[in-house]
Image (cartoon, rainbow, N blue to C red; front, side):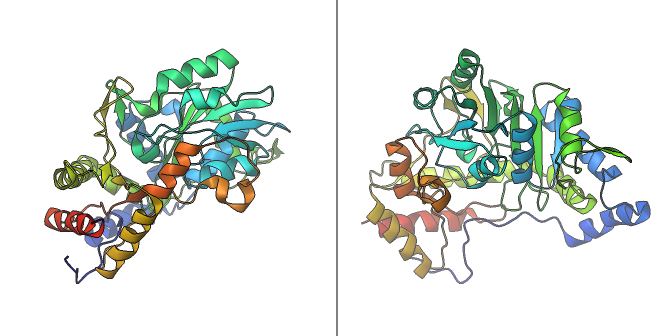
Length: 377
């Protein structure tokens, strides 16, 4: 097995050249405008709408994805006392934390073993008179069953909000994944495929929602003399937007390299019974998928094998991530949450996210994969 002299991390942020970023800072210094919807933020918002093929009137930028979720939950009425929201336990804690922070109760549904996304069938079993919304997650950028959730939301008159934190740039049957549900949230955290250091974006179906979102992220201030709700400070600043523009300039290159990394792992793992790479994401639920290859998750046969591989790789300077483990229902705030999720639990016990980031050499990817195969023998 190969020991790496420099650590191979599960991810690293893409950074433009320091000279490029410094040269672009001149615009910010000239404007003397750092926050409160400055010119760089406005330009970044326009470019994002173009990339996602969504009208700018149906988008809103935020300081991070977590607050974007929290605010859209509030704007769509999930802060109603006693509201329950069906979501997945196989996700990052922000999905459910944001629900709890607006006063809603998450109820966990199970996932599909091939995509690890929540299924409409599992969600429907949990719908009660208290249910106000469904929040599926496009796990690892794999699209959920979009048609299934749309039918479910219409059948029970529920809000449909997608946590699309992993899915920036993904298309379904040629249509941007940003154009589904009542709203979708994209995270631009520095660990993501595409980032603005920290940041988040909401896309939404009804343009009239924008005014409420814009106010809520600015303390719900309506004018110099009016404040009509309880809002917060969730505005993106100019420096973050500038970094986002730099990353947007090279987005096709970032995705292309991630795909090459995925393909390299797939080649080494082909025919292996003891390491299961999630199915190639070009086709799911009958959709034609244009993927972003943001993550490379693999599943092992059991918890003990996953733990052994996870710890063994560290000895060779390879750092993976048990993403997502443990389930949200194992965290203290959610241990009383209802809903049986055996497939999600199996996934959490067996999954490992492998190193994938811009600049990772494909020869190193091949050696990481070979080390994994040695570890499971």
